[in-house]
Length: 210
Length: 261
Image (cartoon, rainbow over all chains, first blue to last red):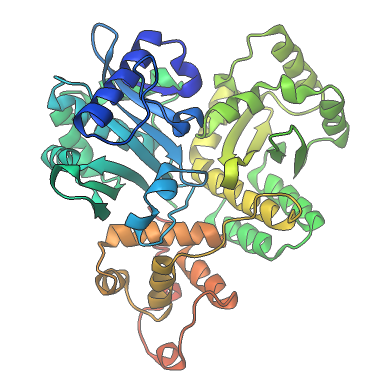
């Protein structure tokens, strides 16, 4: 199931939190060989985790982490601008209607439906908070997964080659993608709405069309 | 609030160069929204406060005197998140929070509130609040219908606050990046979005993100407004020949392409 949690709320889910930071170490340090910091507990945490981000986490039946991603608003400090400005050709994308999405992580052995569920959650956030785009950082493997799910981002820039390739891209919310992503995630629309409501206390509202 | 009114509010806000003007605009905004209060509140890391709005000055002074900043669940809650939040969703469980709420209602703040957290440059934190006395249902309907407008107003007010309070840091984000300059220049020259995307070798939806970003930096409600402001501030230059060319100047587009998502 999906949980939408602020950094503050994460404290109430220690098992989920700890397994997420360990899975991030496994993905970003061990598999992708990114130069990330892993602490004595084996947690991959960075300064953006200390900036009150919003996490979307797929929780497995045993209460551990199956996949996750992290959001920050582009009106404030973001990882994309601090570290990947070169990939954007000098463009600083800043808008209250665009959030950045980083540390897209899938636990080892988690099925492809988990990636789809996370994509679904991204779309639900866009609908709920009137976002026009998500700005993301992702590795080569994720590009294939996004394509497979049917929600491919527009890549703005990349660096590195082959599996070391890191890209910055944009997702736009398209209603027709939601049906595809729901199917790939194996989740019903009602379930997704319920998970959202449980976290935020209100339904995913219709986007306000002028 | 009709789009036109929001348009007027934002264009007047863009022109404002003194705090008193903003105060007047905020009051007009409150009236057009038909609610009790509209408030902007900037809290520095050192706990210093700055803001404007329609709360009773007695309440504002009382808030400072009582050091309610330490207790106020709205400020704490908004610091922890960045999506808009209904006050009912915040943690009012402590005795201090409940006493604060009682005091706030007694000072006419209202029993309902909705706040938009604002994260600005260099870790800046502010919040924009609308509050009212209403039943849960009508309040939910109001906030759902107005959410997007409120988010935009919040951030534009913040940009203006950053601009007016030059002594404070950080400075507002204003500089357009090269891609944004290109996009607005071509749009200003009358090219369609499809043509501009092609000229820049990007997809239309990527172009839209550049336009959204430029629009925010310029404090503009729509693309036309963004182009006009970029022109007037000399951020983009459009030659005479282009100005004379016929084509789809964005302002002639009958549907506001950015506003209607």
